[in-house]
Image (cartoon, rainbow, N blue to C red; front, side, top):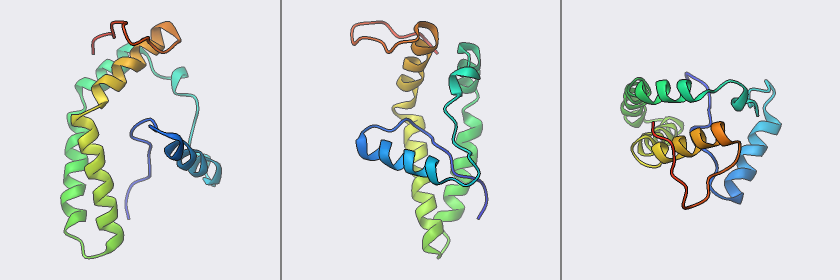
Length: 118
């Protein structure tokens, strides 16, 4: 295997929150952090968004290689990469715009509020 696990989107329901918390609590290397707001700025989020093609290239390359592997673990990892690629093309933009709002206002936006642009 290569690489490390990472959280590519916020959990969407209680089951996903539970799974994420379990992974964090059982991680022997303490690699999960709750400190993203201390490191991310609006400029960094926008810069990352404009360079997301690097993530797409990496995920696509591994997805192709791992989906062709006969080992079931690699095929499962490939499915996870496929989920990541779908997220890049789907909900990520809105999630990042909500995060930009959070970084500026320190609260979640109401439904009728205009989100910042990426």
